[in-house]
Image (cartoon, rainbow, N blue to C red):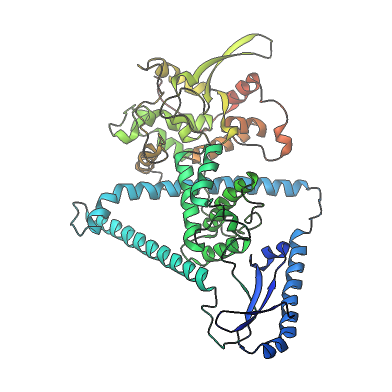
Length: 524
């Protein structure tokens, strides 16, 4: 009996050899090696089986070598100080890039939201009532949208074709096919019917509690993966699928290396959660990453001239609070000042509640009881319809106010607010899927800084955090204290040990912070 010889319903004989389970990830996730012998005579087919067997064993040997390389443990070497510095610098750069990507995505969302009525009118064949520049931009966005939709439909059709026929197309009778690993249309066990874009995203989000915008981003990436590879139950997703997804992303000229890296990271996160929940035996995307050599435009600090120009503008020099609703009333005055003197993120400041501004007791160096005005940046609080949002666990922090903010009248402003159970900046309104309070405000600030003479696109509101860090280091504030003020996570395991810096230390540190050359006029 020739165990590798099988006759198809059309009478053609095939060579078929099962692939061991542990080698399948290294042979494209295939279940067996299969090839057509192009013969209908059994005796003739048996004569070519030995050669095909040798070829198949060569493929298996190559897969075993690939497995040995992939599973070989890396030697554990101690990290040098120089390597630790490089890793820290890379971590900070990655943080900046992630924030840049978030800002760019938000700007694109806001532009589409503003131009959506014009796009709808153009799609319906109506003449929109808008400026020529807005119509032109909306038209380009509409064309881009239609092209992306067509590309997604095309990829879906191709995926269905491959699922039906395999990469070589339908077999032709009598054709001698080359040795190949044929696609396995079904998993070895029963299909669980657990899908990436529904069950996995929902389960991951229920546990990790991302913002609505964050969940939507992961859902869109799951849909992108399905459109390129084909929608399949999650246990059917193989490393070969992930590698194919990576190649398709790289081949897309509209995607940068950073974009590809982030798409793979989102997929890796979802599959890692599925593996941790024992939905799948392992994460097929765990080792599939994108090396990034390109570097985006790095955000710059505000220099003294920039800050002088900004705070000499009408909002701060004359206390001329804009009537534009996007400016959020008093938020136009206070958000830049708090960001400059406290190093906090924009949304962290904008979502402050009155109860988050509080007096906190502490013991000073003379062992005397003192109190310090603080802001409590947290994701806990009232069970209202709009809970606070923070970036990560390290962002939960209680930090003392800079004396300059108290001098300028921030405490008096908070105490005079009519709604002492509400927010510090009631003029800010939530918008979009993420329900962020400061998104529209950010658009207003971008225009306002240009009006004040700051046209450099690399200098944005987030630059206040960079500026704060520069002046904090110049003031001799230790890195551990800087991280506490800015809500940054530690860079290594050693940073996770030890208590939060005491209020006494934080009060002394913020008092040492100053912005050389900046003069602010007037107090409230």
